[in-house]
Length: 137
Image (cartoon, rainbow, N blue to C red; front, top):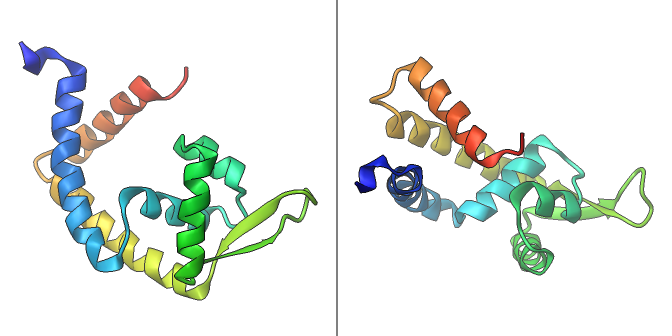
């Protein structure tokens, strides 16, 4: 019966992938949410805390501590936002850029390993179907 539930199957797949993710990211000192924040900033330099909270569905107080930890590690820096004088843009430092570049390479390999039994078309379909579950229509 359980095998017929989307949530059960999504959770089982997530458990497998997230365990390997945690193991491989440990060498970088990154958790899943840390990786997500750094990756978003790598591809969206100057994003604001509000944008990160919205994109990652993180509560602002939780993001504050994440940003502080990354700042203390020298991975990010705050700069005035070019279009909104009240906002602060977040940017990766050179150390942050190097770290996320290496971590993204590792995650790319992890994704290939995790989906090795799927064809490219099946992988694309799986991602599209999962997004239909969580993205607004």
